[in-house]
Image 1 (cartoon, one colour):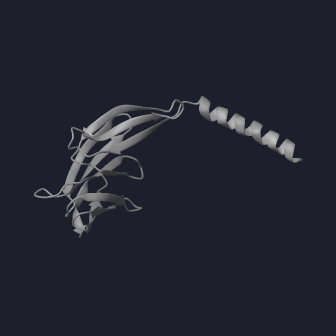
Image 2 (cartoon, one colour; image 1 turned 30 degrees about the horizontal axis):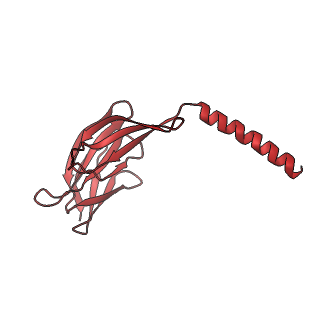
Image 3 (cartoon, helix red, strand yellow; image 1 turned 180 degrees about the horizontal axis):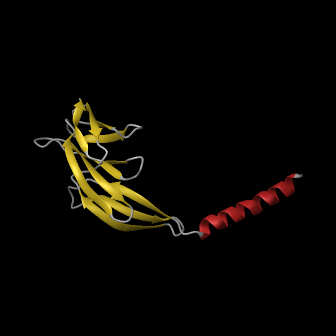
Amino acid sequence: MNKTKFIGRFLIIASILFHSCVSKKHTDVLLVGTYSTEGSKGIYKLNFNNNEGTLAFDTSIQSSNPSFLTLSADKKFVYAVNENAGKDGGAVSSYSFNKANGFKFINKVASEGDHPCYISLSHNGQWALVSNYSSGILSLLGVNADGSLTVAKQI
């Protein structure tokens, strides 16, 4: 096959694939954590329409400075660091989540340090590792089957 025929066939196939992708309505859910000191509720669920390039607010839930979020592998739970310090210190909050109903608070536990800034779940979903920025402390929390967090198992 010569180069011109190959390019022509490639363009036709690419055009068909592009048209079939664009012609379907496709919306992605975006979860956004914010600092809540300036009137923000904390965690927001937004819908992004890929075809139109539009972003629309859906729902939110009150949380104190949830600056970093992570989602469980099965997408049923959201975990947020609560980036605070001082008397109450930092914390980590857990929420049940589904696309239709949004969030429901489960529990909140101490991160055992100040200004937690990152949370990551183990591959099996049974552990949450939290890093605390100001205090330089790593905390290992347990994750229960119902999505709730345990107190730190190791600091």
